Image (tube, rainbow over all chains, first blue to last red; front, side, top):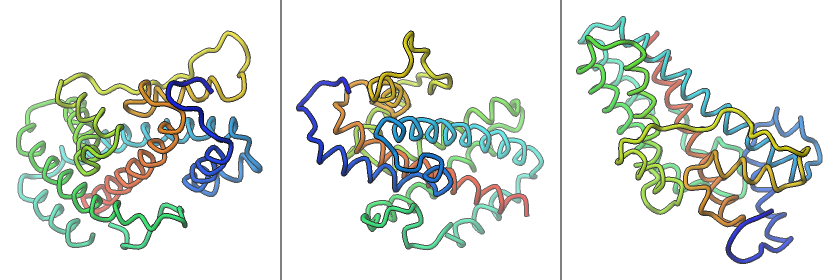
Length: 85
Length: 149
């Protein structure tokens, strides 16, 4: 890898790689099997992009839903959400 | 929202930091949604969607605070009112993928503040960023479910 700063040790790479691996959902972990660092990075990039897309999609859908709400109901929904968390 | 126990699959880290942040994230995001609802009755759905998206990244960044490079970078972008853009397309390498080098560069473009991080920091920040992103996504889904029910 390129980069500034101190060189990362192999041990540190392995540690961080397994940490990254544990962050991927099971379905993605299965896709890459015994991951090389390279495959894992690639899958991580793909995962982050899909999360960004989800944020976009959910924003669109929330926007659409909010258009159909009258001014009283958002408060109730928001309070309900808060109570549930 | 989900229970207090870790749901992100990281067994080694009890995610203690994340729980307090989840509450902050939820209240920040919900308050922002409420403001958007009150002030955007005449604006387009697309405009409202952009504001919601911005509120999503804002609540992530505010709940993570300044202790992380990615959240500091996001906060800077938000305050400067710059458009929040993340690359969608993979950068087209002239040569086929050369081990880790290209992917680390791609990752640097996806994680806020990435370009100024060394490899070690990049991986740590990525892990934290993913945790907050997934939490934010789940929060948005929960809000959606409760509004549509």
